[in-house]
Image 1 (tube, rainbow, N blue to C red):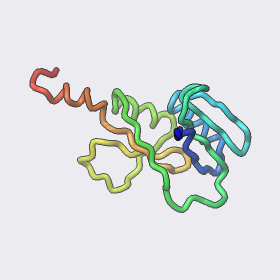
Image 2: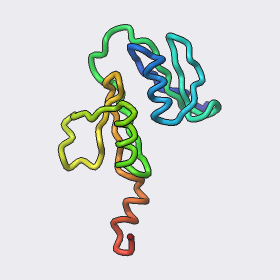
Image 3: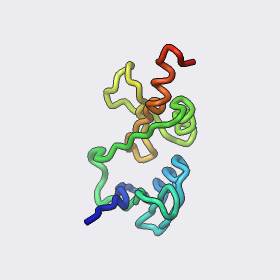
Length: 128
């Protein structure tokens, strides 16, 4: 028996607005844009996706936290801030190698440092 990860459910006050925000932030495509459910994926035929559904109650806590590892952390943080994200403090401290941001509905997510293979090349004696 096989088990395939289809999608992650994200509760939202406005599923379509938050889904559009994340589609633009990630460069993903919309596969369902109904008023109560808004689904995005990396490509129409690729999984997993993010499915935004209307929240039954106001958010009490952040049950889901996404981490993203970009090629260029500073550039991605700047792009996401320009796109409407905001910086968030979850107690990470000044020495953290990641940046915590929040989307328009205050869901926190992290932009990690660059890919591990890039970090090791930069820290090696023969690296640039």
